[in-house]
Image 1 (cartoon, rainbow, N blue to C red):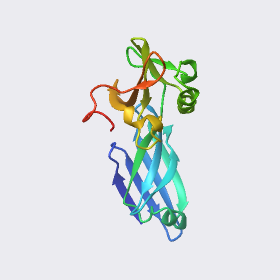
Image 2: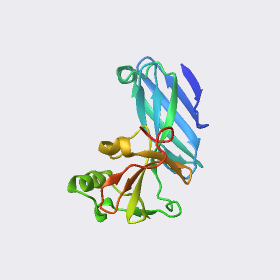
Image 3: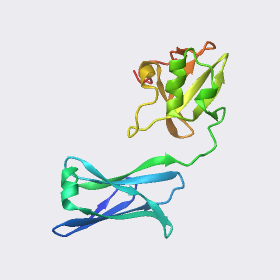
Image 4: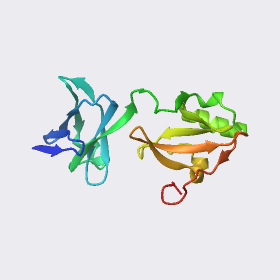
Length: 185
């Protein structure tokens, strides 16, 4: 059996199978944005194929998996595939923003600092006597600073989605303006 699928990002997936195993090959254009993971989708789940690697001017991955393994993951028989940007290559931050280690900022209490530090490097900008933090947003990753969920707002910076939090001069979170339709809550 051999099946071909067109991926939503313009890439392609080819699946060849016999009675025991399947060989899945994913190809997509190299866009220089970062590292991509590839998945084989089935009727009730998906199976990770791995990270695409540069080859002959494009990104590719080829994996051989057992049909038993794919069935356990709900990925057999295949209904398609997908790629997901798993890691952005460091680009210059959007104008007015800088990359910071949140541990270097003044928060209102240690619990806030610890929560921010666990998220890792983020974007920061001064706002009056306070500051704003912007975390990259992806539905495939845990929500950044979940304890502050209802104080968050989604924004687009340099064409990418971020979750924005604002902090006052005292280091305590403050509500973002323009709540409602444009906010997370």
